[in-house]
Image (cartoon, rainbow, N blue to C red):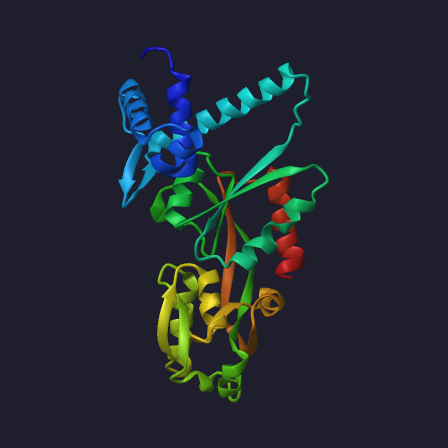
Length: 299
């Protein structure tokens, strides 16, 4: 293989970072045709595809993820070198790259990660949200340090990683204040026929809720289902239906949304995990996350 063309690599890095050739062309002030041509040359040099189509978007192949990780480090070091040559002392800063499964509530993800922001030694926190399987693929090639999920890694994925239980929480049910009085009396039987906003089947909570409704012989009317739990809360705030969150973030939900609690149950619980490529956690930021979660958030 001929010597690596860093200009081509930077174009690739820009497209991978921004998710599309169009966006990268705006950042680099180049035409999309120019960038597409440079990417083709880079793929020819590597003799492999770096991107694949996913609808209208481009996503990295397995090789593309590996190349991106190296490119990320190359350009980080390049920027650091420029600082040194300009007489500026680069600040050594540890990083933490976290993948957050789309089914994990955003308020809970913030509470889990919040301890990182107050560590004595500063840590650059980078968060990525995607479907669980995509995040595990990134973890397997060390693009991520940990993945936050609502279920443990299944052996069927054939990925070497380790589950670290952060804790579990019961469930709170919410509705807009104007609707809440209709459902608050006689909970949970009051949910019979009530409009319900549900997580999608990709969420462990969806299965638990359905089993619980069957066990207590209550049949809500599902009016919508959501992959994004923040969007589900927005619909609930607009009086589209009743929604749920882990009880551990109940105070945050009431503070942020114009809703009220209509009931709670510990018969349905959500468990949350930090999944890492290491059996023993060594990263100080991950240690802070797991310790705070177990001793405070889910205590």
